[in-house]
Length: 277
Image 1 (tube, rainbow, N blue to C red):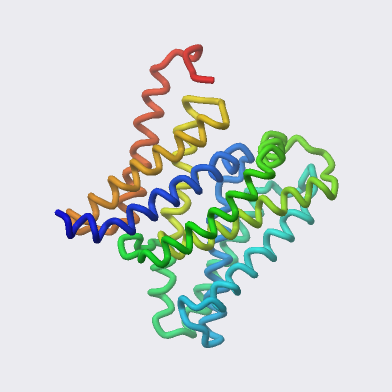
Image 2 (tube, rainbow, N blue to C red):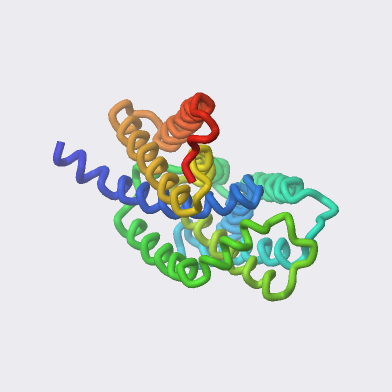
């Protein structure tokens, strides 16, 4: 038992950090109505990684990660500064196109790299069970720095999320605020995908936030409950995958998805006037 806990300590710690961070961002993303932006960003980062691998960089090297960050920042910059208050093309359509183009180019480049298809599979499914304490510490430091930024500009970010879709004209100040929010979000997504894969990042981002929004309209309560729900689903999924010897990412995704539907039915049974503030 002791050996098992020692082996699982790093994955469990990583899941707690990821659940809290992605739950916070998920509350914002859900409010903004751009549900699939993290998948698109993760896929763009994967494309940058494929290009770095072709250039001869190591799979977990700093240079390779910087290329992934650069690709996502370029896309985010274009998204923030080129979009208008009343877009001609719906945001989700643009995000979907970015994802498809990123995935297609990554698949094309995968043929040029030995084991390229396996790398894409790993990027999608991840393997949080084998995360090391070094990666956990790296995530904690990076996420804490971004968390400090969001503590300082938290009110501005919340106001921007609440007003998303209602702004006819975006001033330069508002665009810079948006850029800071999305850039910090992109950095989080890239780092999280390296640990847990695209599917798990998307699920931790959206599923707990959806459940929390069913029962509360308060930002603070939704963020806290998103974290709690994400931790419960992640820890249960890690333990289940370990003892049943099944893939950990899909196990967590399935548990959180089932939890969403169960709580959705529970919410339907609760009178509307009893919803928490």
